[in-house]
Image 1 (cartoon, rainbow, N blue to C red):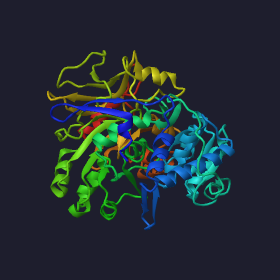
Image 2: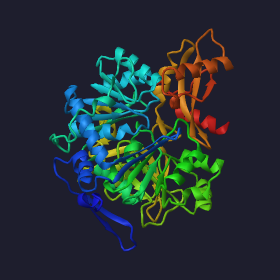
Image 3: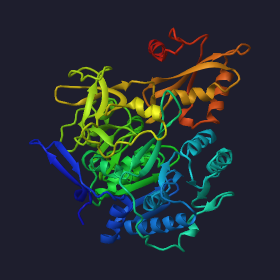
Image 4: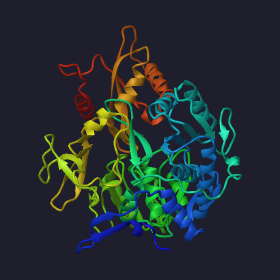
Length: 549
């Protein structure tokens, strides 16, 4: 069986073999669960879809027949529970293999999947339950996680139904033992390609995280991501390092990979260990590998074993800039070039070092021909070669599959980022004479730490609740390993004095209220924050001070 991406797409290349054109064709009722998962299961039922392992040595292989059957059974069960087309379901499943058939089940019944990370704290979960009007939550069996979700559900106005996998928990329905009684094939439920399909929450600087809404065509946009950037192989095994709660999972662990015929490697771990990761690559003969820059830096620091990458044919990275020195060290150790790319939670891959092209170290690559990428100045005019501009997508003539439909019920955010048919990413870059793009920075104050997007507003909103804090500003401080560290500059109320104990107290206060990756790693005290005449905090001055110190 030929990979299904060939059925849904047409690609052209220039004389040098570079990706030149990409077009999609599909029906108005396209549904990844039926038209890809079930279609593969019908033709090649024993074709591997998921290869799972964890730190404890547990293993499991799921074929497309398994995914098709389990997703139908789960879909049937959820329908009987009252979950219907259009209902939003929060998925917090860590790296559990159950994610793959449960998210497919939601696609089959027309429910909207809302993946989220297990690192969310109670307040984070309450916000998501209320803002997305969540109907149900399906989560991993971790007792602490279940406790946070249960507490959040009690305080939310939606009062969602609660489900767990692998173990029974008080207040939750254990979903695993309910599936065997359900039919192994689900009658197709109609959907339209423009229906809501998937929602991710993405951080911003001027408010709480925004709901990024994708439609049913979103998986097709990831054909370029998988086939021409990650270069996955039919019957190969691809490993992208990502928790199921992040958009990177959709980029590298399901849609494009299955469309291109590749199985996905799922390695469940609590804390990254470069040697253990290399053991997984070696043992399971992974053929393509994608990881955030932070992990490549950690590998370079701890030592790279060439034999661990013997089966790997292609390596890629995205999420933040990766130093050329790390790329060089990795190439010397493995003979493989790390192929950088760029995109957002709102998009599929926008820019990349694609198959057939000559990679340029330090460059994000060239635009995906599926997107009409522009570099614009503050007035909306194209910038010259070598000048910095904002990365934008022109949708006036074509709305590309893979670009989100907007920010849910946040009309202000949608209007701010979508102007006159131009989508503004908020990221800046410049391009050279050959058309290669080089990342510069955010136009706003988003912090990228270890691949995570962190909005200062989220962290500031928590710190300001502490009785000692009068006001605060959160910025990113460059770090050789994580890219940036979260720093909070705090002005104390009268009666409080700076101290190391108070720093620890503020960090613990944050840890209890927001996901730990958002919490400030550095806290500095100040008598006042730099501000404009209108009273706005001058974040750029704080960053300049950090650079000088």
